[in-house]
Length: 362
Image 1 (tube, rainbow, N blue to C red):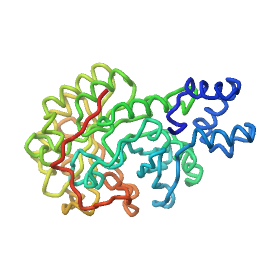
Image 2 (spheres, rainbow, N blue to C red):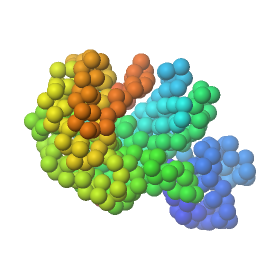
Image 3 (cartoon, rainbow, N blue to C red):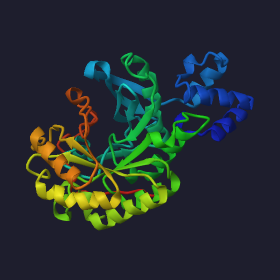
Image 4 (cartoon, rainbow, N blue to C red):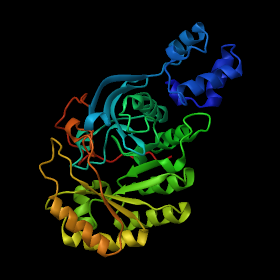
């Protein structure tokens, strides 16, 4: 077990069992989360305790590679996590007013969205809640190397990396709890967003467990026929069920959901799709994010031309729907939306579209 899987009460119990006073656990917990320090840098602890922690409660956070783009404002790490050595990618993005980390919840993904590089991997493993949250610790350490024009500290976390967060629900829930813990990372709930392709049971659970956390839903199509093709999870939870779950989430949380839409040339960028999307977005009081498709090795389609994206956005705005065309970051290092893919894949050609979609909503 990684130390990041322990909350403060559990860590205190471990250290009390070693004969350490309770205040030592608070020191260690603050060092791990608030200060994002490795054990060797916790010089306020006795050397013997640091050695015992490293031996019995390892961090399990190893940086295999780290790359940068956008003049250093985007950083992507290949991380090995936990005792099982799960390998995933995590992305840190610095902006003038915020620093956002995009975390992964699974090694690979079973949702089968063919235009997504992670979906092309298939599902390898679920991460634990501590392994998900530990990625923010890496980001906090890496943020100090961002350009001086950014805050140089993590302000926002988005669950939009590798995997489907709500198909690994328990880990996602626990990771959010770690990040919001006032004794730990102490992030504000409204600075955390969970993304999903539309796992309806998970959306309903999220509204109960973390009502202040944001929700982003990857639609990519506004009719069931096309969405079944682009987002196979739609076969389990078609659009009418998905819309009902989002509406219920909004009613219970009083927050505005986001609709994510990858703009794929000649596939989902027609006027008709904009016309179908508009009433759904209005009913949900949703904000629509249009994302130019990012290239992946296993998908032949191209992103929609800039003019087509502009026309699509104009149709939505004319219908009273708020729209943003997403800024693409990190494309040259395969760090943009839909491009994350572990290099440690036994069979890169494997495609999961015909595999069952495992969901753990507990």
